[in-house]
Image (tube, rainbow, N blue to C red; front, side, top):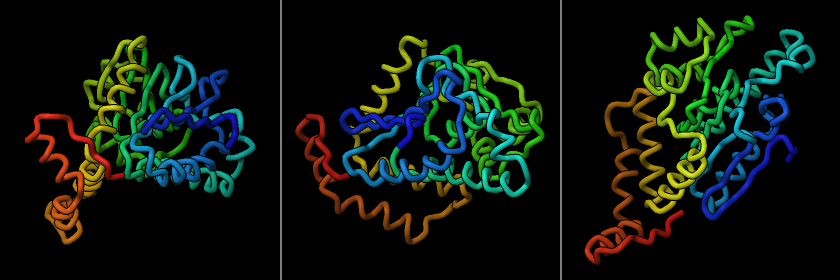
Length: 260
């Protein structure tokens, strides 16, 4: 793992840090290339229940892809196609994680940074946050899967406004249109984010991951149960956590879930 990406762990919560504060955490190609492997390791670690993604420092989540390397890594059509494939694979690896993911957004969250934030389940931002997707300012085309995540959050009309204008949204506007979930004062953002992450670790993980799976299917267009979703629901009754949840409710105590 390079110094540009740092994985930290505290109990059942892992943190993936975009670690280039001198460039406002601009994302290099090598970071995109490395993300699927790192996310795969986090996903495979049964002791980790929640992932927080953040930028180093408090000035930026990520200011976007590192444009200073574009002539080298996107200098022609072939290299640009390869670059786009790595970006898509990184975002898909994040969006496809079975465990809950939270983007903690200090300051700028632009371009590729916004793409990673959209691939997370939740986005908590400080009052200084500025979000934008700037493809139209660079002559680029935003990919369909990335655009769908945007449309799922803000709707088609606002997605067009965001993609066509490339303009920055302040935190209040981003919250109003659904691009972020909460605005937290900067001094409290870290505490709030990790308190929510810790809360999720206390819930039945089978229930948490099943909820993510089922909501993902609904967003993808599924409207009726099939054998897989029916089994997912019915199988919960066979887990030790279901028995523990009922016992804890009757005993009037917090449950201690063990499924991971």
